[in-house]
Length: 294
Image (cartoon, rainbow, N blue to C red):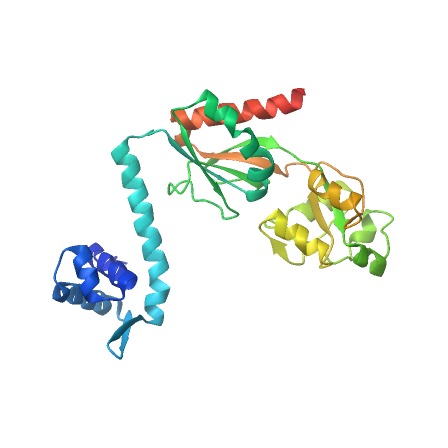
């Protein structure tokens, strides 16, 4: 299917931001009539009205509201891509997408060492639960928690944390303390984003289970769901230990390592040749090796 003309999309974006033909025209350095003509052509091509007019004011229609986020994201990606090309293949800026929990508890406290070793590399850390599209240039590298299988990407295992099943005291009082793993099969459960934790935990204990229940893409939200009694959940042992010690959570079994469930450094294959990516990858793996040797 043929895409609409770029000029029409740029005009739509400008009018949507200003909700004014006059102000959009001033931004685009054209006349208001030219803006109106471009907008009319885009609406005719799409077969919908992108704006509605009432009392001499301009508002986005339902179709316009649906289209706008994608158009703005597309222009942002194009701007970032052209900036990278204009500034060279390796400008010294390195964007790292990382989960908020890992960023706060592990990565950020160590970044001073990286900056001291590589002062020419400016890091941009995006702490987000969203999966950055590395192929589209949304980030240069990513650190993700999961099973390490990312299509057309290189994954380096960083840290496989011990995990422990926990629940709120109220839920334990209501359901009773589990004596062994099989007793947890019928408990309500909450999950991480990939829903892989509980099936792996039960498999580790020789059992088969499905991943039913709510899932959360941030470990902080998962902890909150467990604390509020929504179900049993798996948390990194280091995160759960203070809550268990202070009685806010109850440990349901001993901490274990689950095969494959870990934090991974993810890079696009082509990006491995970039000096800044290679420097960050080498430094990160060195930090992990230091932990293993300590």
